[in-house]
Image (cartoon, rainbow, N blue to C red):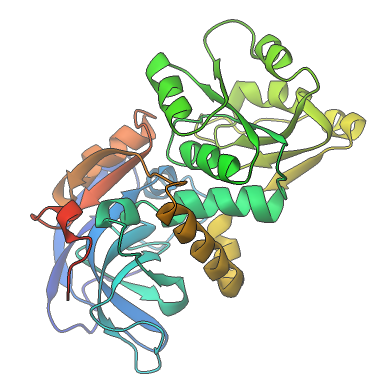
Length: 348
């Protein structure tokens, strides 16, 4: 992002800025100039921002891409469209919106490409909307666009109580699949059942492969893996004929080495999922996916679970919780002193 103080704006805002790489504590809550939208851009007054595991990797400098220092992390927000570029017609000033920002979300205002901005349904709060695009977008893209999940198939979700894992449980159920959720504590497994899982697996209780054999003796059709690490090989071995293994991320910190011979003998597929890059390349398809998920939310099929809401000034604390894998569902940064839940139908 470069010099954040030279944005050509007409006012000041506060943001969490990484001036150097490191742990969440390197973030500095600074005052900088407010940016102004150019062609194809929307300026959003941020009310809520989702905190995601990749945010911490970017701050640490260990993600696939490295932005130029200094930069503002934060890949998703919800708020109000404050200004639009001269050529933007699909987004009106004053509209309640959510957006995939990629970067810049840990701030009072953020510039976003207009095709990544969507009007928030009336029934969705800022809190839920602020953590909606990345986790639900990733899981929908993974299970629908990549795995082509069909009704009646069996899905194994690893790390099922986390930010993306829990959305995978809900989306798989909405698609008519049977869901086996793997989680490390009774509280986490209970949450998975509350959000639609048919069966749960305890990581700490015996051999994972033995548990899978009991629950799915014929194998699983799809593995959804945002964790990586030691359980990846076992999950690959659990694939049924024609099974699909979705690699979402590596929250364990360990990128697994998968035996390709296991995919060969089951006629299986290894599928990479990088939703943000896909969404930018396919904005119309992504918009279709978002519309379908908004419908499911209205029907009560998608119920975002918010672990905690932290004020923007405490972004380092919130990010630390996520990086230590202590969150059940989503962690949100609030950018208002008001009640986010009461602002669902705010007239702007």
